[in-house]
Image (tube, rainbow, N blue to C red):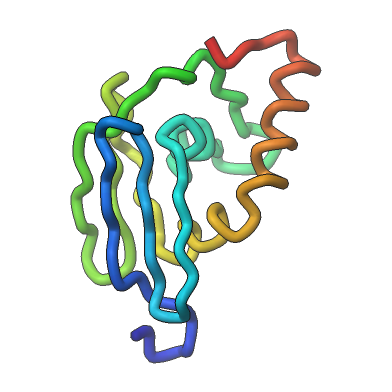
Length: 121
């Protein structure tokens, strides 16, 4: 468990057939996060930019797959996608946030796509 009482992952499980990541935390929370969501909300500078104004709306990733999970120290996992994207380190706190607020994040993303005339592909 994390020393600062934040939830800590007890298991990361990749379901390749469904292309989703299940993250179980030591506080009992369990989140299933689709590869598409992880890809379009990658914490990488390529997606997030270096400020909110630089954030990129990633479209066309409906069928993206996760090919690998690589531990990064004691704080994150690097997710490798089949489209070549692998530069985001998903901190465990960020995975918790994505899972806990999955529906809200997804609706905001879908609205952003619609406003920009983009599709999930």
